[in-house]
Image (cartoon, rainbow, N blue to C red; front, side, top):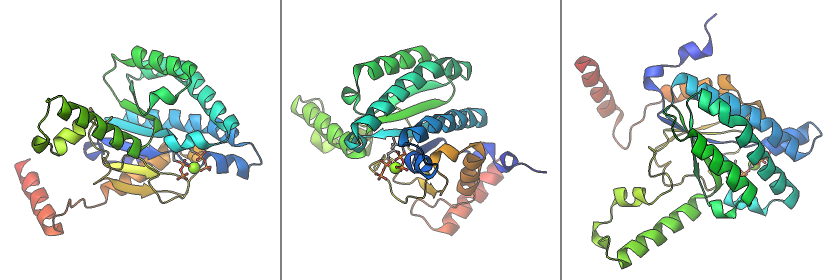
Length: 257
Ligand code: IPE
Ligand code: IPE
Ligand code: MG
């Protein structure tokens, strides 16, 4: 029997996959449990998907773990999530190192409690030498926060005479985003049956392929990831051009090979 993974064309992987890991709370409530139980089980999915991406050879994986807006959740849930984050980071570092995974973080770190910042800093330092999968955690992140921050920093550099406002172009803006070191995501997955972006990488997702699944995050596994990648690989990405232009370019590239 052919397995799903065999249908994934590893020569045409999305270089960057971004995931809105949603549905933990509902997954738990459907089982008559507290929401935190769902977050706890969501960690197993993170482990599985990170491993899946590393095995395939995906270059970048961004996981939306906590949004700026999530600070407005009940105190108990926020505290539980921060503790879970710190515990998970400590526990996972050896596995990240074993799999050559380099951790990065994007978001407003100043909002995090000191114990979480410490655990995060430790994990960043201890994985900084790795050269495989780049795992980017979006924590206390929102796109509008990021864009406002970028504009502020550009304003400061303009005032200091470091940049001429007339020279500002898309590359300039890109350099001031928290994602300046990473390529734009090519595939964005959202779990749990919600069809929205929820303030995630608004600028960077301009040409990403969007994939929505009803699967709740704690049930999401490598097989679900493969399904999303196969779906991505069956799409025609036109970037504003016509289908026949794209097909012609592909035909020329095939001949060149
Ligand atoms: C995603 O699951 C995790 C976080 C936002 C931290 P949710 O907690 O949003 O779960 P639902 O959407 O309420 O089911
Ligand atoms: C988005 O999920 C944020 C994360 C997954 C971390 P939310 O559950 O917070 O988003 P909304 O409220 O449904 O838009
Ligand atoms: Mg949610």
